[in-house]
Length: 331
Ligand SMILES: Nc1ncnc2c1ncn2[C@@H]1O[C@H](COP(=O)(O)OP(=O)(O)OP(=O)(O)O)[C@@H](O)[C@H]1O
Ligand SMILES: [Mg+2]
Image (cartoon, rainbow, N blue to C red; front, top):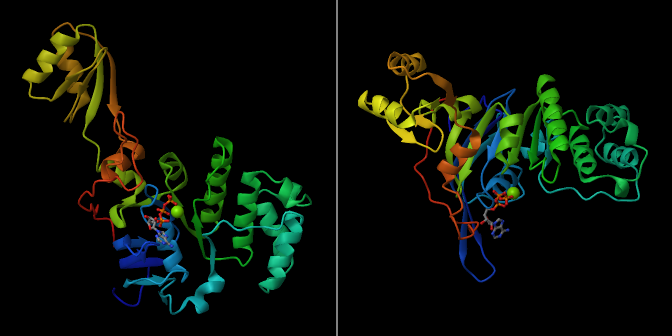
């Protein structure tokens, strides 16, 4: 690790093996690396059991690493955590709130315990959209409202860095969208956000950068768009009247063509106009010519090889370890 660190979070070669109940060993982190730069909304994506929570717990000093280097806000972790803790808000274990207290009372108690001015309570309630429900008891809150209360508690001390483990877990689509808006607002306010999730669509919606973990190792990292474009095969969906004839023309021209029921998939296309020209010249009029862009879901499944088989349920540790892919976007 090059010192001093400028990244907000820097993790290199992190290793953690848990002793299991029966005396065995379970490798949770196997040389994991991650860099989160200031101002990012950074998604931390991986299948169940891939090591996300273990990474975050280790970073926050809740689990002791076996090996590796970590820094947080430019200071060594876990050694310097007491010094940086006031600048970091984190929700790693879902916090258990006392159901009989109202949302506001809960935050007032947390503010007092943390030496935070009482005015912050109303500010964070408004920030997470709970202002109008703050007088209700927490046990009457929906799951999404409890998540918001948790985020509010992490925002009390006006952190520069917010670390959230699966903040959108259990939220409905509207709740996920609201969580996304909240993350964007926090980011616009200058807060760096690290959000873990196993839900790809959520990361694609919420985050600008992503690190993908599989079996305790980083398998991809970079801006979401760059990670996706690394998997762009230049494929187009082509619809035309005579599919067989069109497939013949394009294959003869040297393009890989896959024939589907009602369309062709043509790969390695550099210029889509060339396809319509070639087919048009032969009296075949293209009715659809659409680029097939990869989404995070297909990239994630390729990287973690976690696609379920046709009939066998996938087991949590059933992932093929692909070679790590660094998209060259690390500084
Ligand atoms: N305290 C522990 N003792 C033994 N094994 C553990 C412990 N904590 C985690 N593990 C194991 O380490 C691996 C990584 O777990 P971790 O909780 O970090 O995964 P995760 O990516 O957060 O998964 P999820 O998406 O399900 O939350 C798993 O195989 C898990 O069983
Ligand atoms: Mg987890």
